[in-house]
Length: 179
Image (cartoon, rainbow, N blue to C red; front, side, top):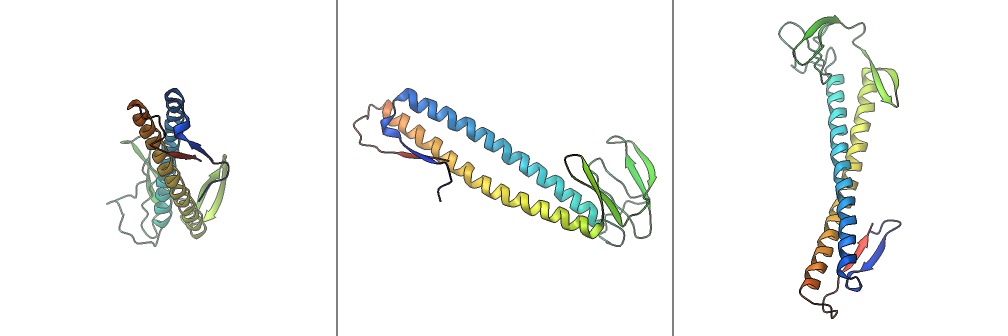
């Protein structure tokens, strides 16, 4: 499965300096992709947490009840008992104030770029489920690309190894497909 804009390089036609440059470029790309991978995982975790909070609405009965007051944690967890609108709102990791929900059946959702939309909890659940699924698909696609880049780095390292042994007679052949 070749991606658009990919090219093949015959590694045996490159000298040691060129192989080093290709390796450096691939390692930089791999580092960038790995950082993107981590950011996608982080975003997915945040959306999963939002989804969990929306599902913790009154009547959900998931047993996440605090003894006296539900707690809105720093990570935006909301534990609401059916018919109760009282919550603890965090000011810091260990400092809370009492609060009251005006309408526990509706939430305000950050839909991106500074826009907030009021949604009923079912609509918010669908929104966050779609976000989580979209991120899962992106993570899977990126994982394939990271694996390819890792193989490319290994191919270049193998080429450098063969060249360090003085094997420049074409007895080894490695092709690199850059995506």
